[in-house]
Length: 431
Ligand SMILES: O=C(O)C1=C[C@@H](OP(=O)(O)O)[C@@H](O)[C@H](O)C1
Ligand SMILES: C=C(OP(=O)(O)O)C(=O)O
Image (cartoon, rainbow, N blue to C red; front, side, top):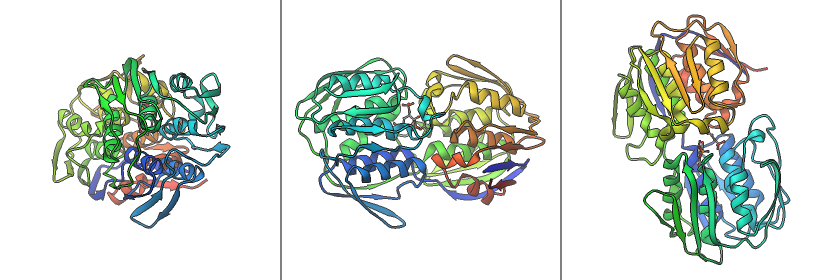
């Protein structure tokens, strides 16, 4: 699908935030790891959450669903011995399930997206699984990956947090089910640290005990625990909503997004503060964010690691700010669906933005007068690139054509519909 994004001076209206992708993957997983039946209310419906749903079903979970909820009978620590799993393009789903696969004799994760997930590194998790007695066959740390497990053991485990927090989260989900107690130490830095708080939150909701150090670098995990079946409610998704809020910020607008919890462990909740710091007229009350945009933004400097999945949307807003913005500490954006520094900066430049890259920074020299546009954008298989460039297109002189825009469905299948309902001028062309 092509998205033809046309200049749109005004956006107005109210939308419901989509359900959180990262809570949905976690709740589905711990429901599958429970002995008994759990309920997940308002799960996300996107390619990534579908990938988790499909894989836990393949592994033996029994799922039923209606419009509002999913019930899941879990398999505990005894998944079905499948030989192959397809996680689509979902990094978190792959990494979380690599540890679950350690309970199976032999599972191969296939390489369904060679130009996206197929390029992402998983060495740090592979090293940790080996410490647990699991044999892993891989192509230089990348897909396809075959896990030969059966009887993984606990004990002392180290894992690097330099590239992704998902490796640590993966181990935290599975370690409580092992026979032995475990002690996990994170080596180097821990990127996207905030999201580990979501992992610990949902694990605790299922009655499982983990003792975490304050800096989240050390964990003591008693073995032989069980996830209790529970009822969970998924909160609204900040990373996806960040793009809607950015669109409202760069146009004249009166836009309200419902169901964005003020108290949330999603790091991307910070976009509310980022946009405020950029001078956007914004309120956040009763879990509702309202923006009255007037196209005026001021530049700022931000530690992007605090809101990793919303950096691109905030950069898109900064493209139109007065002054130079800096998004630092974002090197691990290079290991996502595409290289979200080099690839993204290249697409922004094509659109007419004045941007620079460093190894771990994106620098934006704002153009309050707008950008030229009038070019075709390569989506690089990346939903967040698609969402951010759409924001830029709305404030361009000649619009933008975003090729392969259907990849937005990885996390936010209704993104364009939501923007259209607010009055955005976007034409969707099926190819
Ligand atoms: O744990 C998770 O669900 C996620 C962790 C983050 O990845 P990294 O830890 O690789 O930054 C984030 O970007 C991703 O969308 C989801
Ligand atoms: C990086 C992302 O997801 P994942 O790592 O799960 O593919 C994302 O949603 O932006």
